[in-house]
Amino acid sequence: MKKHAPATLRNREAIADVLARELPAGGTVLEVASGSGEHAVYFAEAFPQLTWQPSDPSPEALESIAAYRSEYEGENLLVPIHLDASAPADWHAQHADAMLCINMIHISPWAATLGLFAGAARVLEEGAPLILYGPYFEVGLEPAPSNLAFDAGLRERNPDWGIREVAKIDKVAQDDGFLLANRYEMPANNLMLIYRKG
Image (tube, rainbow, N blue to C red):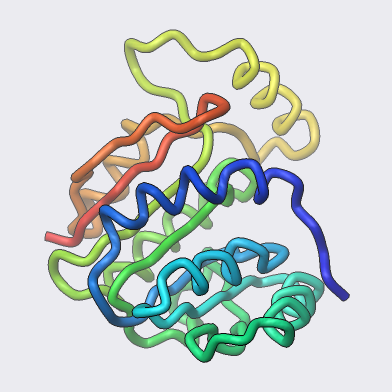
């Protein structure tokens, strides 16, 4: 059964514009936490030279991704795989030329972010990007009121959730051999952070 994430339609073009600058010319992109699968289909169509590997830990999400994939006419969108970012030792993915993670870090426990970078260190080659999208807090910059309210709402729903600070993500990245290579301001007070394996 297909799921629909309204934000997907609002942000996919802006995300694709950044991906066009940061993704490799060829190879496989591992998308972590693909959710409904709408992004996976859109990006697979937008980047036909790349093979798109969607993944998610949720059976309902995997079902939705598969439903969207069944309607996709291209051949570069792979069967979705179960992948829990917080358990990188159990990832079925063994290699990728790039990784993309959209709107996961703030709606998952911190262990998922730790696992995301640990897993990326294993599956990516030197110079390959791990690309993050979502809301983040930055030291020295006044947070948008909407992000403060969003963060408070997330923490009410689950104390382990919440908007993370870029500086803390940078530290995790460095521990796993990644450096922040690019930062893009996106619509609706979101960021895209491009980490590359050193």
